[in-house]
Length: 436
Ligand SMILES: [Fe+2]
Image (tube, rainbow, N blue to C red; front, top):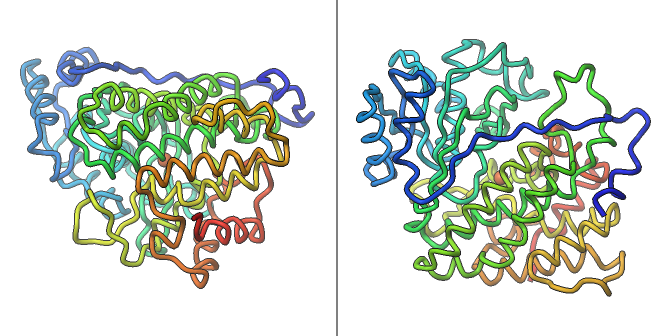
């Protein structure tokens, strides 16, 4: 199936794909290796990025002790904002300049890791803030060169940020989520300790796992690399290069593990096997989407999160309304895959099978999207996820605003297997309002 999928490349399409593996250490207790790794990278004074909910946890204590034992000065920045903004990215960069560090370590979820990436970028190559931000919102200028070493230590099993060169934030003046994407932002090393997930609330595990599920399904069904226009030169081939045989490997195993362990890992915090396997699935999906790119569910998620009204989910910090990243993605996914299946029913059918549908050999091409969407909805209901856009506070009256907020996300939308214009996007949001 993999070979057939890549047979029909465009004459004007790319003729090759690049594999940029992340440098990962995975295993229970591996946070204690932070000091040795930092020393091997030549770091003498390191900025430790985390947030106020994590700074007093054993995870940060273990990393800090390991660094100090290795003789490394540690400057702690513990005011990372959950769902970062341009202002919070700038504050992180200002800290890094002030602290005069020669390396970074991030201990936390995607918000923490992304903030450390941005702080590293803007403290190393100062520029107007919008210079490196994705076009058309920013100028999309290339990062001028190598950044300082960055060791990423994820504490949730979802983000994949430790494996990618993407940093996402809310641009306050536009009330829109956008990002910075460059291979240079990819952390130098990732230390992935699955024990970090054992104390996470059920709702956080569920939202994170659905982020993983969508990373894998989006990368697996993305426009194939040889149907994307060839880059002007090979050195500027994007990380979001489309589906390819390398990313397929990670997607397949991540989806299989999600199908086996998602409900178990959410329902029972003592199910160590399930929580460890969800962390491994997150890692595999992170490697995959770091080399293929996501598409419409993530592109649509930016405005779902950015235009939040009063939704406040269980298990997350109270105070400000927020739609956690995984929820802002998964409320779109069944609707999108119903619509994209026409392009490649084989891959949608296979995705459903890996997610627990089992034998799909009698599912016709015109049913593949429906079977996959229904399988996802079964998992969403079983883990108490919101029932579509209405479940996170939106109504039909909000659709045009959601569309306006997502249309600029061309990097993601153009990676989808079908062409997405305003009309298609509107239809995808309308069909995501409610699922059951
Ligand atoms: Fe994501």
